[in-house]
Length: 110
Image 1 (cartoon, one colour):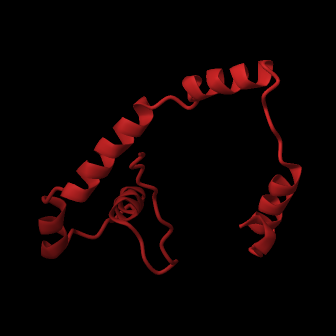
Image 2 (cartoon, one colour):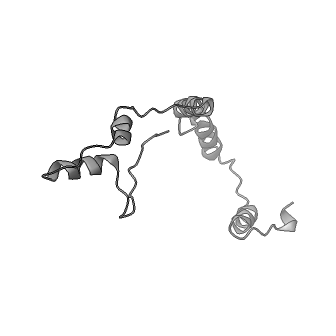
Image 3 (cartoon, one colour):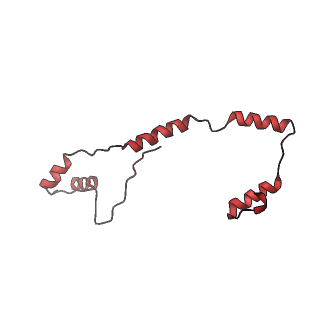
């Protein structure tokens, strides 16, 4: 799980604190910071994670440890295929594709 924080674009009449500071640095006669602004600049931003986020990160770590390919199932399938015992029901496959694409269930397949 990635927790990238993306910057947001503010409407033209709003600016972020960093853009206000950079525009003041360019200005020859910068306005002195107001008391309110001075107080806000001394506070630090904090981020806290809820228990749910921690739980989700644990689930993500567990899922990352599971291999993408089930090698046991692949070996079993290969053995059936090599022995010529693989039975393909084309009608059932076609019915399932139609069901998946249209949402219409074939009553004959139940």
